[in-house]
Image (cartoon, rainbow, N blue to C red; front, side, top):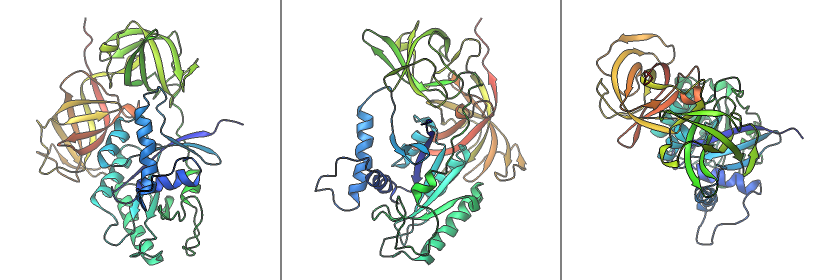
Length: 421
């Protein structure tokens, strides 16, 4: 059997629209859950409990394999990244173990729920971060305010389609599936409650997603996720290869630390590996660097093509939310790959139309919610970030401040720091 194509799939949507219930339902239907919730967990909470339980197990086991929930479809191996709360979503999406290849946008059909501020924000983030494959689950079809009504489904679908179009997706290429995570309608099995719907189930749509081409021919970039000192082994760095290939014996450089080291061995899922490729979550045993020198957010490259430590970078951003306005001098925290760094906004070069890219205003004094702009940032300390067109996973970022995601963006250009003589 050839190995199945691997897809990273993220579930997003407003916090109460039933994401965890949907994930729990899939795990239950596919027989991936052995243990059922305790009796005191009642009703719909049971399915959410299953998803959360798996998440806890995952967080407890600090193994080199950063496994999320794995589900198989006939042709694909899918890693599900459940992003329960809003904050987790941002962390997962931008600095998490994974970059999503596809997403399930969950929107509740229940009266009074529908498209919410968070739904809009998530759709914007997905598009800005380059997630181009999407399925919309119009959930809670079983709710008594909906009662499997085709009209209600069409009403919510029209609103979501309108939102997706505004953000830059083509709704005609996206499946909208009427689901009930709680009852299991159209999740893994066709429902007899929606005779008016003749499209695929959610699970069938998953099988149509494709994984992006592996950037094997690009230089190595491996953002550091974690560092351990293992007795009898030495320093072990954990992370996911984003581009290029890494082999035992390679000479690497860790930036912005500026230290070189040698790769003694590589392992994945506790098995030794002779070659690590993009998408592989690995642990590497390195010689020449101590655990306390390396930190999460550092990036590994080969000595002959080190990761870019920037003095300044130009980016295109979309402001998702901000109580007032953003002007030069503003210093939020930029989250990119596994790292984050306080960066100062030094200039707003132009305000643009996010859909057409046309310039609306040169050098505006400020930008506010809903604006898209080309801006320049200066990191307060050495930080690795790359141009989006060279290394997409290291060139997309979120701007965080006051506990919220203020903006999301991609790096257009970089000014590298001068090398120390």
